[in-house]
Amino acid sequence: MKPVTDISDLEALYGTPGPAATDKIARRMTPEFRVWLERCRFCILSTVGPEGTDATPRGDKDPVLRELDPGTLVLPDWMGNNRIDSLRNIVRDPRASLMLFVSGSNNVVRINGRAFVTLDDELRQSFDVNGKHPRSVIVFEIKEIYTQCARALMRAGLWDGRDDSEGLPSVGQILAALTEGRVGGKAYDEDWPERAAKSMW
Image 1: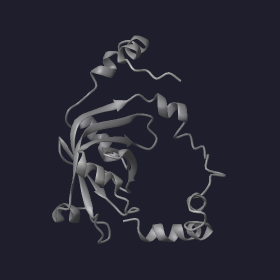
Image 2: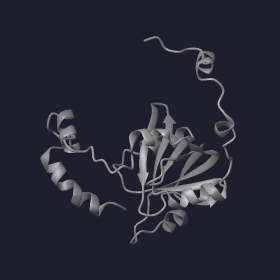
Image 3: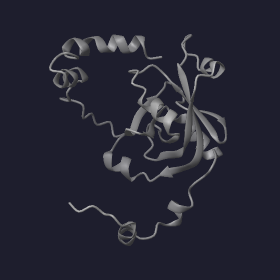
Image 4: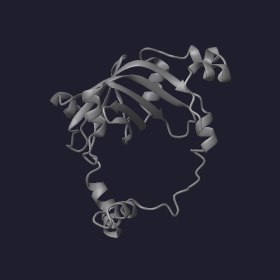
């Protein structure tokens, strides 16, 4: 396969985007995007660092992001696997992006900008869930915010209620295969639901 090495080749193939694609970018939070933010309980955080790119799902029972001001969002870093890939990247390279999903909507909101990680006690304490708080908070400075065309989610039928999970290898099975049985396996899968319930926040 021959790679494309000249952007002009792509531009000739795809043509000029219309005004709905070029004029849709806001530089700060707007009332319309704020409604999206208040409904969004799941997003994808993308970062870049010396080792490459990373994208991680982030979710919460309430809005996953909070607006500090029209140009600034905050994202609590709740309990996870402690790899801190995203946090490592942000500390070394502040470029970051967010993709916001709202259940039932085929549209997506994309936000590009810069981020930093803070251990600010007052901010961490403000995210209280039954006395638990995130260990750190990601502060996201908006540079661009805009909607993404609905075609991708429409093609996938993401909200059609179809369940494609039957027969998927479990995390325990994947871990066992990767480690020749040293990690994972049936016991891992059986213990996971209870372990997750105790460490959700």
